[in-house]
Image (cartoon, rainbow, N blue to C red; front, side, top):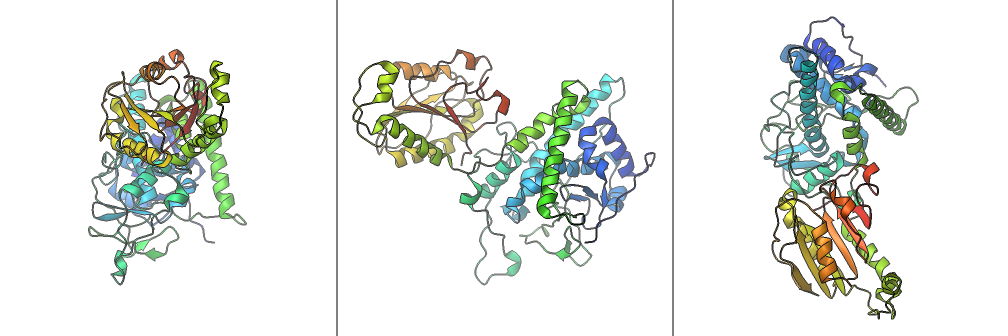
Length: 496
């Protein structure tokens, strides 16, 4: 197959791309890394795109329409897709779209761009701070173009959410589904099929980010309105007013992932696997540089990239996790005439109910300020659990810094429409309430993002009953079981 030509950048050149690349390499070398393997030339997009291995730049457009900081942002954006392995990771969402602002958008590109663009802006702030430390007058290494996705809080809000690219993409697909076309309707309105929920897992519930766009679009056409894809062929994506949603578009939520250019004898699977290994290598090297204090403005990048890559969509709905958990509890004694679990725990011979379901369940709901906007989906999920498993009595315990008004829901009963809360996050009051009010409950389910004061975990005492944490927040893997969730069973879940 024909491969694209590489762009030769003069290290002393004065074009926008040359100056921008030079600044990016000096101040944010980790982000510049993929460009060291070569920047490929393309005219199939207005600004930039990537195949997951190389950034592709439309040199002519960038040099005539962008200043150096904007050129660096475009290059950094495509490099960021490579560093985060987005092309491989989001391939399962290929073709998926969302209907937002009366326009069809590429779901995986919106999801990845929202997270990526805000990160680039943060890196630019770090680079400016490094310049100040060095006694230099700070300037913007990267400057966002007007037409990118940044600060679109109805899509993703970093103040209340911390999602991976996969989690955010799936959330957006569910929040902004494409209306199926009318049979016999215009073909131009035909929408791509939505991702199958059962095949992609459950989505996270939360909303919006510090990665926005003003909703306007950039287009790369061949002059007659046809859009160019990564392989140079013209095509036209469906849209609903406001122009076509094109592919190969930088940062604006349109598809800037192009087909990979394979080397002789290489398969697509080998291409993606090689890129995955390369990402692991560069992240490891970055982590070593950070440990040695050599990362400069890119300090923290290794953890940021690792956390995003490490959080793929949960493939099993959390109700199914609960089903398995209840099944295990049943095998331990719910359906036995003698409750061996209680005897081993307390030394008291206690009669079991001979029932496949729990008699008494405590459901703690984290109602801290960070979760107030999640309350609706939380309660919906709790109700689904009660309807499915029909425990004889469920204590619903809202807790932030303290336990608020609790609710006792009998089998077949309905939850209140809302729960009290909105303060800080502490777990101990909930466990104290359980010890005082439901000491012989058959199990505790704690729905939370898990974010509390660091000194809270050491003072917690494990309840004398099975505990399941349903956690919809992110925590670094090396802290799990050591500094976070030191007892009980933790399951990472997505809300919605």
